[in-house]
Image (cartoon, rainbow, N blue to C red; front, side, top):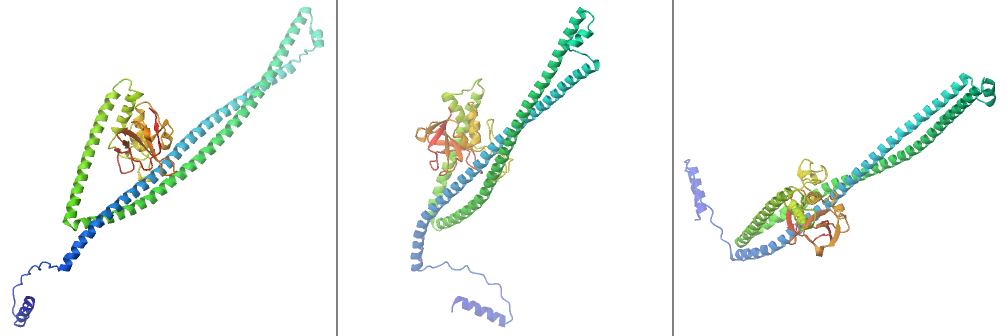
Length: 433
């Protein structure tokens, strides 16, 4: 009789007899006994998963490239917004300056009006005094009123003096009127200019608001796309992990690969730490010199050292100036605006300021800040730029030699040294030293 059947019969007998029995010990289930077909299918499944391993690895590479493309598009939107903000600041400054000139012209107009009133008052006072005195300054009045030849001469001289005074008063009035007409004309012209500048500033603000809104919308849309890409990546990674874990050989292979990646990452991190520390030491030594080099190899090395000394500083959109890392711009790209760091163009501002070079704020403007050189003639210290197709430039980095560059890449990453990327690389670099 089968063992399980004997157990059931024993339990029933005990129940019928009204007795109790001690709890039966649970035996562990027997190990599986696969058939020959199951063994063959298992071997085939291992082979199939080995092929799946390669396919999934390729898909992961595609997803990583897609994420890089989305980050590049978002960087372009950020650059558009930042460029519009720069234009807005320039327009507002021009409008304020025009307004100040218009205000000064209004002061000049008021002064000219006051001068006319004063000149007219002087002329009125002269006419009133002449009338009240009853003076007859004509030839007959002089002859009839003079008692002696000397008095006649004196009266003639007095009459000449009065005539000159009257002429001066009239001339002063005319000059004041001319000055007021000129001042009015200047004030109208400056007022028109101020209004035009204000209209330009308003248009620049509309442009900046539109670019800012576009960047914000792009950030939200691309954040959703990145989330979708990341979700698919995690799903593929889970499938890959399952495929690797299903076979001891694949597990060992993946373990060796992970260890190789870990060692490489540690070596690269140690290398970048050493480069950062060496660059910081050279930078401090150069800063202690009364006149740091402004040209030649010394200036190029100082610029590179200033950039390399910032390895590990976080990326912050809108962050960085000639003095170092700063807080960024809140809004698009998810930056809250209270973190301190560099964006790509801000890192260039800080690096080149060490050689006395003042660069524009935005990467696409930095492209035009120096002499263009073909990528085939790159030298350390040259700035390299990236754009997607015909879109505007959205990223800048510095070539440091040995086919490497330093950059502040994107939100969530830090200033780093990486191999020179060829994808989307603009065919010309910019050399300022």
